[in-house]
Amino acid sequence: MLLTQSQFREPYDGSSRKLVLALDIGTTFSGISYTILDPGQIPKIFTVTTYPGQTKSGGDSKIPSIIYYDVDGVVEAVGQEAENLRESGEAEDNDWIRVQWHLHLRPNRMNAPHITDDQLPRLPVLKTIIDVFADFLAYLFSCAKGYIRTAHAAGDALLLSLEGNIDFVMGHPNGWGGPQQQRMRKAAVHAGLVPDMEAAQKRIQFVTEGEASLYYCLENGLSSDVIKPDNKIMIVDVGGGTIDLSSYRITKIGPVRAEEVAAPGCRLQGSSFVNDRASTFLLAEKLKGSIYDDPQEIENIVQSFEKTVKRIFKASTGTVHIRFGSRNDNDPEYGISKGVLKLTGKEVSGFFDPSLDAMLDAIQEQRREGGDIKTIFLVGGFAANDYLFGKLRGELAGIGVEISRPDGYTNKAVADGALAFYLDHVVSKRVARITYGVEGTRSYDPSKLSHMVRLRKIFVQPSGRRMLPDAYLCIVSKGSKIDTEEEYSEDFFRESATLNTVISISVTITTYSGDSVDPQWTDVDPESYHTLCTINANVSQAARSLKPMRGPSGQLYYQFHFRIVLNFGLTELKAHMRWTEDVSRVCCLLPWTITG
Image 1 (tube, rainbow, N blue to C red):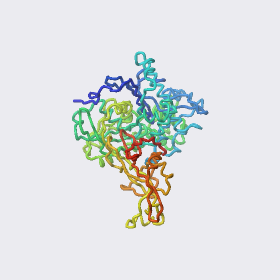
Image 2 (cartoon, rainbow, N blue to C red; image 1 turned 135 degrees about the vertical axis):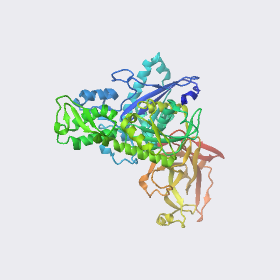
Image 3 (cartoon, rainbow, N blue to C red; image 1 turned 45 degrees about the horizontal axis):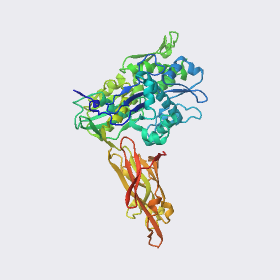
Image 4 (cartoon, rainbow, N blue to C red; image 1 turned 180 degrees about the vertical axis):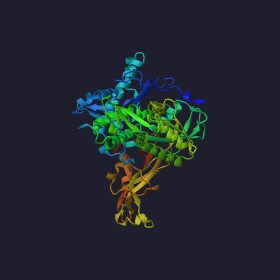
């Protein structure tokens, strides 16, 4: 028997109609799903299946994630229309700049030595990554509205009634976090999806691609033999840029509820890197010295490889044929005859194997952390490749793990899953993949070696306390189970000889992504500390009621006590500061600004 999460979906309980757009902005392809929420009606998920430039209506639910700019940075073509202009040669004739930008947003701390900024496609002059992302978001928004106009009765009137009442859900790789989310929000403002950052905070949600894929699997039905309490499953989403892994334990069914059992994994080894390795091999080895030893010629061959061989490649045995030219294209010395390049299966499998190895390594890491996971679901566009799937299945069968591909895995897992995430909230607990805390000071303790080596840094507060700087004060540790409905907090205080300096308080939330299980000092492994957001609070009213205290030398000073509270609600952090004012607890949910 198959179970689908939509069987248990409740009617929309809002008071007014709302449109929700889910945007899957992938490295190589992007797509859109949407729902129209009507009060009292059970939501349905729809997919945009028609885009400008496609040769047949309803033929594909995704478009290439590319933009062509002219030399002045003006958008000339986007998506399938841009790909059509590349194939016709018009883009090259006009010297337009082709941009595939997604990996420009990646966190610098991601372990990907095979990728540097210099290797990524250049951005147009005077264009930032936020500008480019905004241009693509604006295009997707336009495509969504155009599709709704024609797919629904009285579509123009429908969109008019929804104006200003549109929410957005965006998927992103598991390895991305707050800084990337905030840049995506800024791009959404520039694109006109929302009017300002305040609206962006309220109307834009984010979900990791791994979790969105879980929702997609549940939405499309999984066997009741798999979806039952205490069973553990792993979702492996293999897309164009990243391999995203998320592991869960089913806690209940009817409807399904789940909790993460391992920190989400992410590897920058998606299908686009297969193309990169093919290009490098052809340019540096196979066709070096031939008449095709030219980057543009190699790109054309790789594009042909992408559309044919890459999708149907199954085994490392035999010969592989890439048809890229006409019957007049001949160079027998280099394996080219009548427009066909011959490669061995072993050569082609070498393009895939680093991605396969990264996937297997990441799967083993998830199993070490998450326990005995026996069931894996492979989703994403790259999952369609039989060589990849066959090798994975063979390797995993040896350790008693079953891997399968849900129906419809190739096109819309993230977009549909992101919308189901917005509607259903299946995951109740997540595992922190990094440590969250604040930079501050710590009382000097001469019995601790780490304090003794910092003896020269001691400073004395007005209260007489001897303190050390560069302290890291943890609030949530890496690997901790985070309940989506709970708050995580720690108490702090600010001490000063003058009242003026405690009227305004600024606290920076800092993450730690290194290997230490108990990071204590920001001057140890400093490259692993990253500013996530800053909370600024005007506490002048509460500060005026502070009573001065007297230090050991007779000096007067003030202490202001407050609490930093973190809430991980859905998939992103919310931070605020709480303090006591006029003998009443005041919760100040302050806007927080991503600065990293």
